[in-house]
Length: 150
Image 1 (cartoon, rainbow, N blue to C red):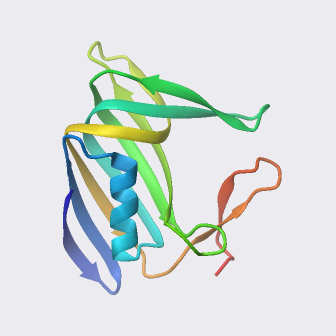
Image 2 (tube, rainbow, N blue to C red):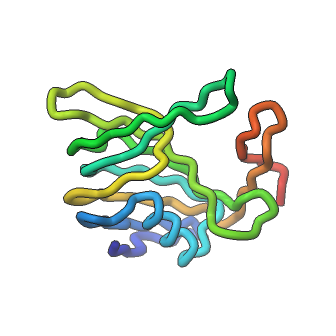
Image 3 (tube, rainbow, N blue to C red):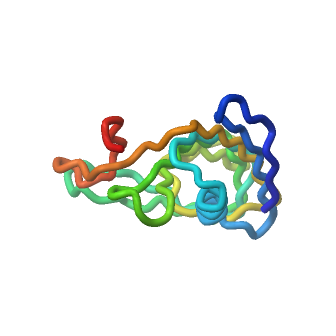
């Protein structure tokens, strides 16, 4: 993983993060976010993966159902948020959704749980000069952004 600060305008920073073959996407972005102290950021990415695990949140069971992807795919779209976890302590919290394109052009999409890059993923991160925290939603059990928490 390599990165560079592109702009810093009144505390709003934009970075590029270049991931390489073998890098774990979620782990790499989490590490980058911790190193840079990111707490209210959004990011996008394009590139390719050798494998991934997506998931679908099943409202009835209040649990994720795995969608394994065990083939080379293109990242057609990837969007994520970086926030502070509930209580503000610990690793940054990532919430990531993506659409992956298969060789035949068909797609698979969902919540990105893990992914291995091959050959690259180009990630652009925009960080706000504030913090956003999460709280556990009592109805779903999911960690959701709470704009009022500080």
